[in-house]
Length: 244
Image (cartoon, rainbow, N blue to C red; front, side, top):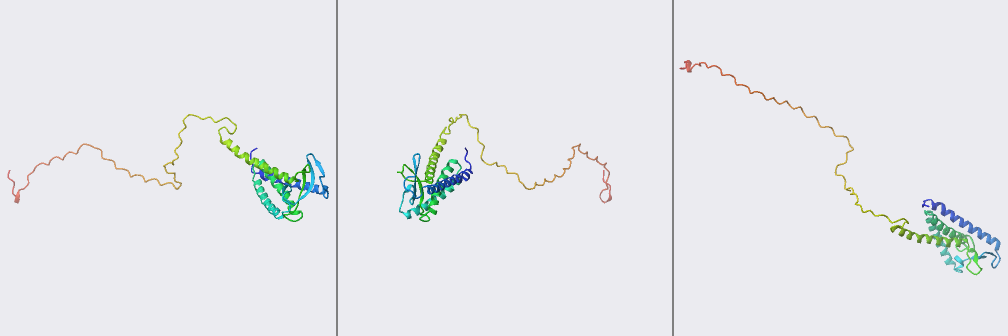
């Protein structure tokens, strides 16, 4: 299944809500059925029902240390907010499931810390499940919390190995890629084209037409010299006739 951005926004709150409701309902049923009794009350296969009010941390650890319980409760609230933010952004169902289990388990026990005696941030967590009445006592919120941590850690460890497998030749499961020995086609010149880009402004006006040229005279016969005028006598100086 391909990762989808809406997977975390839909799957994560659904898982967290189921864990919270199942945890609080089971605690209410345990209180209604076995409150005021001592010792194991029922057996469910390898599990036994043993009602315990736990003022410590998970699996009955950290009794008689109220300051430590307050610090752990506040740190758990911050971790729950971080898990909620990561779960809402999860793209796969596995990641959304693991983070939803973590957030639901933390909020299930956190509700007991807030609303039960001896007071806010120090309330006793209701534990009612044990193994053969000799091991630690826990509840459904603890089971969801541990399961979510293991699932999220497995997903985080699996992702680097998958990325290394994809990076190696043939790592995707198919045959190795075939290498061609033919020469590669020449690559286009990445330099820009020196020709200027066409302008987007108005087109320039066309140049004015050239004036018409005068026709050259056609070559013809050279003009003949005028005939000489007939000689005639001109009067000499002082009106005297010129001598012959």
